[in-house]
Length: 247
Image 1 (cartoon, rainbow, N blue to C red):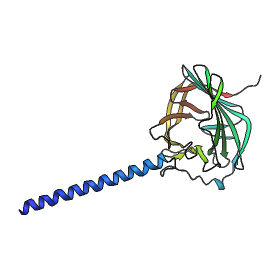
Image 2 (cartoon, one colour):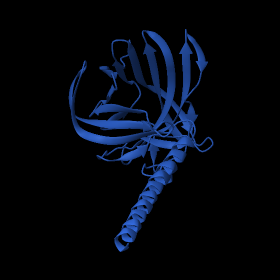
Image 3 (tube, one colour):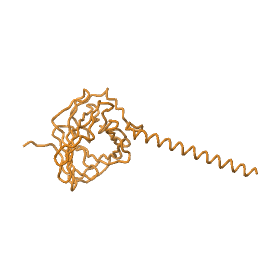
Image 4 (cartoon, rainbow, N blue to C red):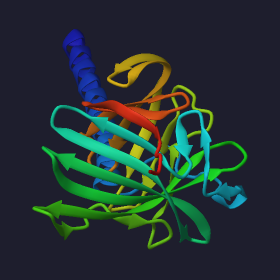
C-alpha cells in the first residue's frame, strides 16, 4: 500500500510537471504567434535605432551598399531580371532627405514591377536606413496595384536598417517597420563567404537571412560583396554593375 501510494504520487507529480511544461511552451508559442499575426514588432530584433541622434546624408557608401547617383546593379537568372539604379533624385521623408533607388523587376522579359525606394545613410558610421517605397505592379504593361507600398512616419511606420555600416555576425534588425504592411528583417550570418556570379567571383562576402514579421515561414538569403553591394538574391545573380555612362 505504501509503495502503491508513493508510485501514484510520483505519477501525479510527473503528469503535473508535463502539463506545466506544455502550458509554458504553448504560451510562449502563442505569444509569438499573436505578435506576428497582429503585424507588430517582435522582441529579439532591433527596431530602435536612436534616429534622433543621427546625422543623415542622401548619398554615400559603406562596404556593402553604394548610395551614389548613377550606380547600378543588375541581378538575373535565365528567366528573370532585377535592375537597381541609384537615381539623381531625392525625396524628403519625415524631414529627412532621402535618395531614390529605382528597382525594376522583369519576368520572362515582361515588366512586372517598378518600385521607388527611399534610403539615407548615417554620415558618421555608414548605417543605411530604409524610409519606405512607392510600388507600381504591372500586368500586360498596365499598373494594376501598389501592394507593399509604405512610407516612414505615416501611421506607425518607422525607418528600418537596410545595411549596417559595420555588420557583425548575429546582428538581427528590422529592415522595414510598417506594421500590417511591411516587416522585413535581416540577420547577418556570415562575413567570409566566397561566391561566384556571372560578373565574377567575390571574397569576404556578407550573407544575410531575411524573414518577414508578417509571414514567419518566408525566408530568403542574400549576399553582398565589398565595394559593390548586392550580388545575389536567391536564384538571381550579379551579371552587371557599375556607374551608368551617359552617351
